[in-house]
Image: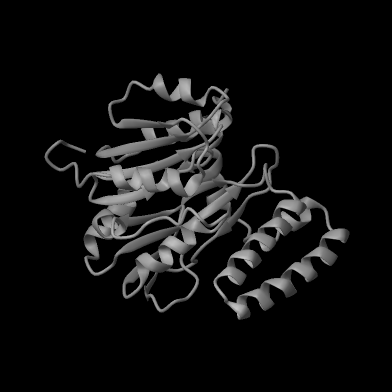
Length: 283
């Protein structure tokens, strides 16, 4: 992309806490982007595993690193990055996830060609470094949606308008779901675009356990109770009871296999071509 036609600046927000295991691969996937006009604001949330030293060694001037002296939590790290964002558009990249090489380019093109939308979100591929299991989540066809309070699209793979995003804040009091909570407020009264192409690779399966899944229901139950969302409390209570019984008879692999759909042959090829080289080079 020439300097004249380099397109609008995109800010990538990356919160990280003790992410040394995979952050090298995440950074490499960003450096490999076909779209070059980006800045990446990395907020080191009090890491103690060598992540801080690695971040300080980055030479590319497009990276801006902020260090928290202590671990404040992901909502505070996201909020700090949002406050520092200079781009026209805003995207996310967690420190253990990967971008497809054309992720930024494709989403900028969609945003620029659809001035009525305030967000584009792509499908994602969930994967783990210790398993060959891979699953896709997200839209299967292009959809343009007028937001009306439904469950928001996937935060991780979304691109937003920075100026609008700065009108809202990530809720630091939530123990989980601060990303969905942010999008519910951001999307109110707006229109968004769902892209069925997998542009984001979500490192999920290594850290997922039966207990973590059950704990996520407990946290969401607590948050719904605090907000007096009694319908949500009832629905989550039922899900928690059903899953508690179901998990006794299933392996973690069987449980994970239901978290999304199988990849197509081409999507599997894309994963092997895009991600395996990055992951194999990671220390």
